[in-house]
Structure formats: C-alpha cells, structure tokens
Length: 133
Image (cartoon, rainbow, N blue to C red; front, top):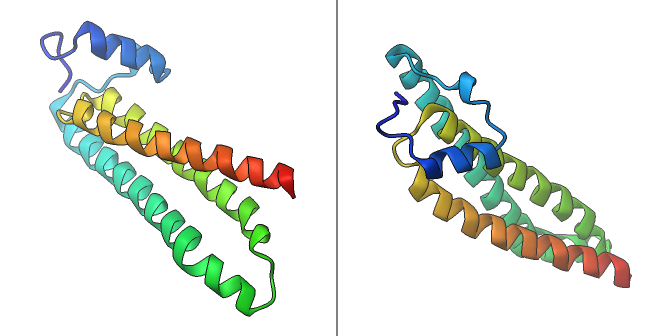
C-alpha cells in the first residue's frame, strides 16, 4: 500500500520520470496484492525477453543462420526489435512497481538501469552495424 510515509521525494521524482499520474496510485490493500502479482509478472516477462535476446544473439543466430545460408547481418533487425521490446518491458515493469509502491522498487531500479544500459549499448552497436552494411 502506498502511503505518504513510504513515498519520498525520490519516489515522486521517479513517478514523474516514469510518467505516472499520482492519482492513479493503488492504495487499497486488496489492490496491492493483485498489483504486486502484476508487477512481478512484468518483471518476469522483461527478464525472459532479456534471456531470449541473449540466447538468440549469442547462441542460436550466429551459428544457425550461416548453416541455412543466411548472412549474419540479417540478424540485426531481429535483434533490434527484441532489444526494443525488452526495453519497453523493463520500463513498464518499473512503472508498475512505482504505481503500486512495491517494496523492492529501488533494488529493481538498479538492476533495470544496468539492463537498460546494456540494451542501449547493444542497440547503438547494432544500428552502427546496419549503417556499415
């Protein structure tokens, strides 16, 4: 449950950064459990997407595509799409955590920022590879 006691100025800043309307916060205890489950599901989905991206980028596509006669550069658009979906998923899970006042939201923020940094780096690298081709 979100109360003034556990909603700091930093939480307010993050809420604005994540484009969360303060009036849309969940405050009823019955809504909190459902909101927490949805937030944890969003986290699971974002982690699954990140794992899928890694498996595709480093394990399957570099070896599978040359075997079937497709150039490795053909993977770049696929990876860009997966990166964008993973970034959106992380952003949405962060929004959900702040909306419900999830108790581990700040810990997750650290993990999310690390993942977003890597995803942005990979995306910039992939875009550079597209421009070279």
